[in-house]
Image: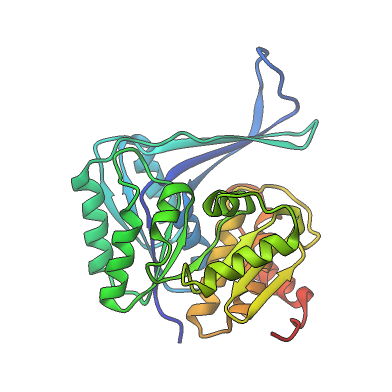
Length: 312
């Protein structure tokens, strides 16, 4: 039996997406097919986990009208949540798809100012809520210190829980070496973390392998965009190519990847098999409009398409 997976999102969002025939400076851009989705790293992970049939709980900070709508959307999706009220307003992120160029324009606010009492209440909720796996995901709002995920790692270690971290910049760098089960940076985030460009596949492989062998994290999955992704574990590297699927929206694809990978790890699958399911779920997510909306049947079909993995 898979264990409960608790997610922590300190900077969730109300995601608004729409299509436009053409985006031009100064001119009004009229949109259609507007969508409202609950968003933010851990929120997306919990929503995808729920779609996949996993037991999950989303711990979020929520405030203002946007926060109230975020909670309503999670309730409508059937995603269990533990909300911490905040004085500030939850951010609203906007994505517009330019149909003339097929470019996607994303506008992502920094988020509200959060007090020490508010983010401290989120950590207290995390400590009190049972679950063998914790997924801490997303950016930090103003007022939350860069070492907050180090504190989450200490909490997880005390309770014997597995911590998965998906963030970037100083918060990610600070948490390395603190017992992380898995990190999932993009290529750019990984290069920033190691402090140098990694211009060749060999350089990227070696850097990711060094990170896990030196104890930065037990596993490191690096997303590579159209090139696919790589998984580094102490025994070596596995690379999988991106699946060829129709793209209707890319927001939340990385969170979908992470959700499926953690889902399979929690079921006791090998890291390589979990990685393949992550690839399938990330591809299934871009096949649907909106934020992180993969369908379970598409995920299963794409995993079959990947086929047998090379021996590790």
